Length: 175
Image 1 (cartoon, one colour):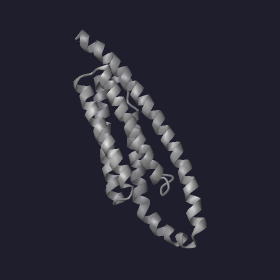
Image 2 (cartoon, one colour):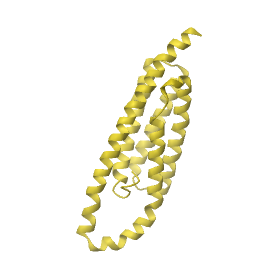
Image 3 (tube, one colour):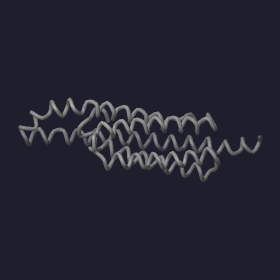
Image 4 (cartoon, one colour):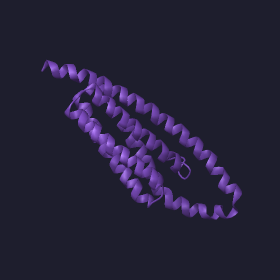
């Protein structure tokens, strides 16, 4: 029993560090998406009068995508805000939050119908890697497992940032 407590302590701090790192990456993602979106939204309308006529149909078609993008961001935010004091429960919380993110990513990709395929594929791949690392962390808590999970979580954040930057051009408020 004593050895479990000594292993859980470093894991708990590692998960807390992982959550803080991803929270910072997610915050950076949010600010870069909105600035990219505001720069991209003004040039198409100014350069092409016919694009103004296409805006209502694009807007109507992408409202589901924008809602999916917002839901994906919300689930990613929840994934990054784990409770460090939960110990082994934190791993279970991450697993549950990860499942929610994967569901949101799948829903987004399905509604996108091939748009942003490269970015959604990268995000799904990063989520699968994170899932593997979290499973390893749950099975054998160690500093190395925490480090691997943190690295995988960073890859998720990078992939999400790239997706939201691309989607932000069409859904500036959803990302």
